[in-house]
Image (cartoon, rainbow, N blue to C red):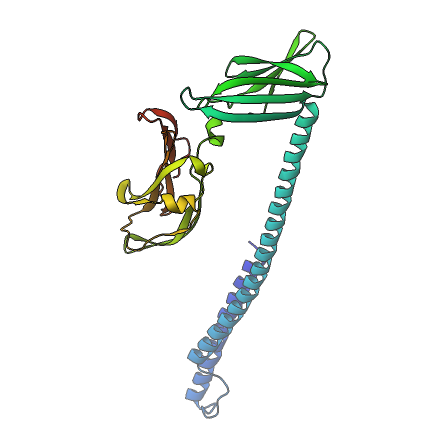
Length: 333
C-alpha cells in the first residue's frame, strides 16, 4: 500500500475516533443532566449530528485539497512527459534523417557510378517507341572495362566516349516497365550489377498526365457530405491536348460532366459548384484526349468521409480504345 493510501486510512480512522469520542462524551453529559449533576444550558458539547457533519466536511475538504495537489502534480508530470516525448520524436526525426544521409553517402562511396544522364526524345506514337540517349561516368575503369544497361533482361551495350564515360542510343517501349533497370560493369571477368536511376515509365515525360492543385473543405451533416473549394488541372505538354473533361462522381456514380479544356489550357482555377448531392465522397474522373489519339483517364478521390475512399487509378487508351497501361496500385482506404 502506498504512503498516500495509508494517509487516507489514518485520516478516516481519526475522523471515526473523533465521532465516537464526541458521541460518548455527549451521552455522559446527558446522563449527568438527567441526574441533576449538570445543567443543559450553555453546554459546550456539540450534538453528535453536528460533530459528524463537521468531521465529514473537514475530511472532505482535506481529501479534495490533497486530490487537487495530486492532480496538479500529475498535470505537471504529464506536461513534462509530453515535452520529453516531443523532444524524443524530434531527435528521432533528425537521427532518421542523418541515417538516411549516411546510407546514401555509403551507397555513393561504394558505387562504381560517378554520374548518369538520360535524355528522352519525341515518341513514335505509331510504334509506341521513344528514342533514348543514356550516358554514364564511372569512378573506376580501364581500357578493358565493358558496360551495359539491363532493361528487363535486355542488355544494351554502352560505347566508350571519353575518359570513364560511356553512352548508348536506343529505342525503348513507351509503356514498358523499367523499374528494375541496372548497370552491368565487367572488369577482369568479374561483373558488378548496380541499380541505376532510369525512368520507370517513359510516357510520364511525353504525355499530358493529369496533375491537380486543390483546396477543399468538407464536413458530414445530416448523412450528406457538405463541401466547398476549388481546383486547377495543370498537366505538362499542353500543346498535345485536344480536349479535357472532368466528371464528378460519388459512391461510384456519375453526377455531372464538365468540359474544362479552356480552363486547363489557360491554367484557370475552377470553383466547385454548390448543390452536388454527395454521399460519402467526391471523386473526379478526368479524361484527357490528345491530338495523337490517346485518351488518359484518371480516377482521383478528392473529398471523402473518414475511413472511406474510392480506388484511385490511371488508365491510358489508344485511338482504337485499346488499353495500353493501367495503374491501380495506389488505393485509398
